[in-house]
Amino acid sequence: MELFEVIAKRRSIRDYEPVHIPREHLEKIVDVGRLAPSGRNAQPLEYIVITENKLIHELAKVQDCIGQASAVIAIVADPEVSNFWREDAAAAAENMLLATTDLNYASVWIQGTLEPKEEWAKDLLDVPAGKRLPIMLPLGRAKIPPATKKKPLAELVHWNHYSNRI
Ligand SMILES: Cc1cc2nc3c(=O)[nH]c(=O)nc-3n(C[C@H](O)[C@H](O)[C@H](O)COP(=O)(O)O)c2cc1C
Image (cartoon, rainbow, N blue to C red; front, side, top):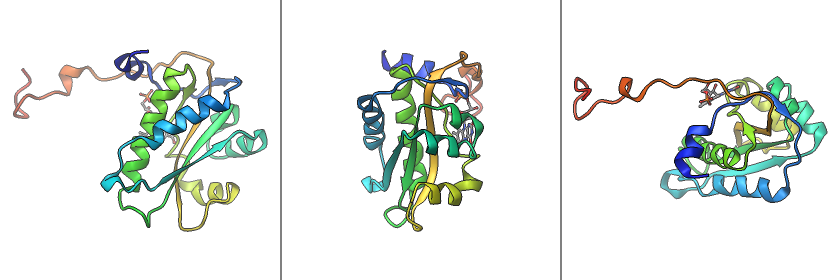
């Protein structure tokens, strides 16, 4: 798919059918996380690719839809390496969501529901105490088409001055 098409197609999906995701696709997705920009190029992120059913079912405690996923990618950040780890994780997550869309899988950015369960999830995945686990991306095949609506561009854009819309 062409880049603008992929960006327009990406939407959060929270209902998945099981699908075999080859290791090559998982590596491709994580690799575009690696290529995302990072503050001062500090690259404070690592990735856990979760393919074991038992772990995936446990992770449904974070959010139900994770239990239907065929794989999950968790972003691990080292705050000792960079103060920008949150922004870096966000950039990596978006890159990976776009790659996921391009490969015809579905996903959703899991952060809000992970925050209160972060320590529990770190323990489950053996993440060292000093590191953070800000975002998870469950991957599957979409069961239903996405429905989110976006505000129209004209409502959001100002030219040169905030008061100027044209
Ligand atoms: C910072 C951030 C945190 C999010 N946390 C969650 C979450 O915990 N669970 C969830 O289902 N969706 C989460 N989302 C996805 C948003 O709900 C979703 O992107 C938004 O509703 C817009 O829909 P779209 O992704 O289809 O454009 C999060 C998105 C962002 C950017």
